Image 1: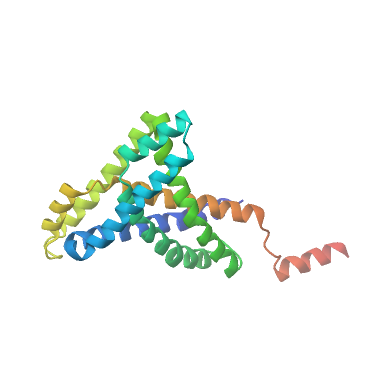
Image 2: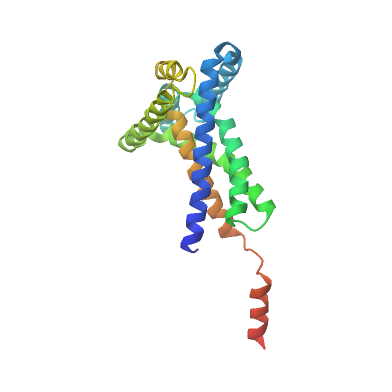
Length: 225
């Protein structure tokens, strides 16, 4: 693979991750501004997150390290935010990933672009579950990741607060977010979407071969003469 191809896939992945994080911030804003209207959605996300952990708890029953991972998932991860981030990842992967792959020439067919997008979504969720579940095995690395994610989150809130003159109620909204949100999980989910998209794109290209262009075919035929 050429350097340009790697850069092209990296741009697509960054676009997906950045867009999904922006949508997650939008979800946070809406949940604060329309707290009463959003309450059923938040409750659904909370219940879904709890059910997910319960399913994992059943699957790893009898396994020591499995129980360690699930307990860490239950005690240290805000599964409500994880569930709320999934719609943002789906939207970003489809709305940004497919057009970017087309515009930058990362894939050859529309079917392949759609397949990459649809595969990237469960791959993101799987990567996030593995990361959140087994971070207890690598506490120092995970602590560094949390510090980076918290820095991004605080920088996002600072930017939102500085927009108070242009966005009515932005400072009040930011203060509410600082008190009620542990938004580093949003950042980590966006990073997972970025990494998953890149890996899926590379795997698809590695296992699929694009048809040769007419000029290449003519050169091959000429070389056989």
